[in-house]
Image 1 (cartoon, one colour):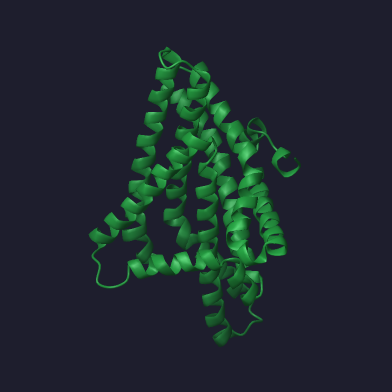
Image 2 (cartoon, rainbow, N blue to C red; image 1 turned 45 degrees about the horizontal axis):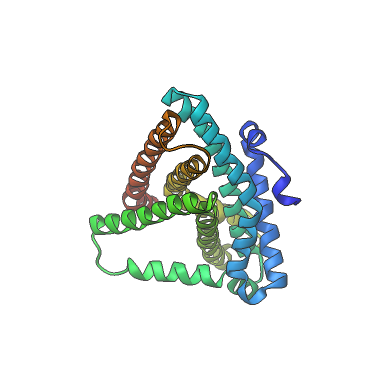
Length: 282
């Protein structure tokens, strides 16, 4: 009852940047505990340990946002209130990504390969699916439909398990962290062969470029997942607390529908960025 009690949703809304460091801490603690206790299965166990620490905050956030749905009738004001929760959840996610990418880069290669074995295999599988002569339109359709499936899982997990979407988001954070870490390692080896390891600026350049590469489409993509998870969680709490025939419940369904539609639109934009913009720079 220590890690999960560090912060409440109300405090998080006032200091969203603090959630970056909390996400970093949750991931780091989960990573080293899994490596220490369950080293053979650390790839998945570290995700579960991180999720365990996040669930109380996420569930409290769902309850708070559902209460806002009841108290606030104006939809624009309501969406503005939801944006406060989304802001600190995004910071929480980025803390996780930075932690996973940092430790993937800094840990010995053998340890990192063992620790992130499942994530690495998933990235290899995804890369194999998009190799060959694939048109941009076909690639866009594949990416958008795959991301849409993840979004549906976020809604479903949040509805069934309250804060269940945090598992999918934490898993994605670990996969993105490995992708960034691998990008950094690859470029560091290139710079080392030309400039030598003494040039420390090469490290920061590779790290910043790796983060930027996945942030271009990753930020709107993860935002869409959080919006969908928030919508599913709000409905889940409302189902438990309210009668289906009340006006409050109707307003909650309307608000959740708006959130889901907005999430799909943002996901569409993210897929466009990933296919047509990111490759132009990287």
